[in-house]
Image (cartoon, rainbow, N blue to C red):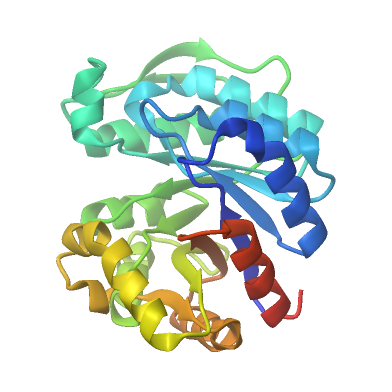
Length: 288
C-alpha cells in the first residue's frame, strides 16, 4: 500500500485548514499537501498551521516557486519546521508559473538552472553544509544554517517536461507528478526521472483528482465539466484525464493502477461538494 495523502485546495479559506488537517489525522491519511500559488496562500505558513494542528501527518509543500524563494530563506524556513516537527516535513519546489513570475518581477533567464541550483543549495543547507555557489541564477557566499535540522527533510520538485523530470531525478529527493496523467504518461515520466539518475529511494508522488459519486453517469458528467482546464493543460480530452471518479469502492483499484506504474505516494485532490466527506469515503475504502 502506498502512502496516501490529500491536497488542501487553494480555494478553501485558510481558516479551515486546522480542522481539515485534524480530520485527516484522525481518518488515517499519511500526508497533507498544501499549495503556494500567487495570490492564494503561502506554502510555508500553511504547512506550519497544518503541522501545529496535527500529531502525526506528514505535511508537504506542493510547491513553492524557486524564483520567488531565495534558497537561503527557504532553507531557513524549512529547517524551522523540520526541527520542531522532525520527520513530518517535505519541501517542494518548482519552476513557478511563468506569467506569475513575470508579474512579480522574478522571472529567471534560465528556469532549469534556477530550479536545479535552488534545489541543490537548499538540500546542502538543510544537511548543515556551508554553501558557496556562483551559478547562472543562484548566488550564495558562505551561507550556512545555525540551526540545521537533525532529521533532514526531503526536497522534491513538481515538474512536467522531460528535461525538468531528468533534473529532478538528478538533483531532488523526489518528484511530484501532475494530476491527470495516464498510466502510460506516468511510466514515461518516471523513465525521464530515472534517466536523470534517480535511484529506488527517489519518491514518486502522484497527484490524482478524486470525486466520489455512486451515480456513474452523474459522476462522469461532473468530472467532464470539472476537468476541462486540466485536459487543456495536458493536451487531451476531459475523458482522457486519469481521475479517481465514481463509487468509493472503485478507489482501491485505481490507486493500484497508479502504484503499478511506480507511484509511491498518491495524493488525492477532491473536487465537487464536501471534499472532506469524499476523502473520508476514499480512505475508508482503502482500509484506513
